Image (cartoon, rainbow, N blue to C red; front, side, top):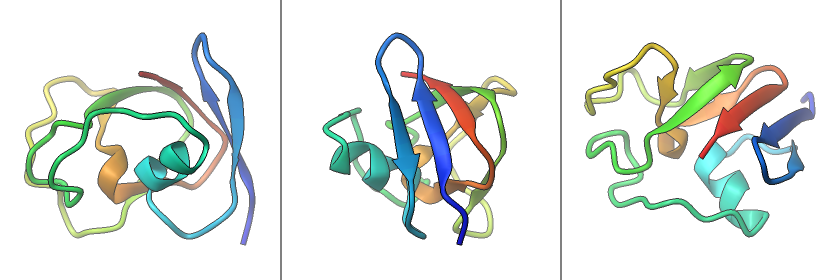
Length: 86
């Protein structure tokens, strides 16, 4: 398992170590964003990814993503170092 760096614009950098959602990793590092369903359905947790790659832990999120660089951290994980904007 690789460790990846998650850089949050204007905040800090954290290390992704486990096979858990990006949202869970952020919360474990005291970075809180709004969330509700935690399954890719509601879109409340929508954030922007500026660099890097993620994969979704479910087949396809149901929430609409309106821009190419939007992701749902509740149901994805990084597969490279990433830079995000919250």
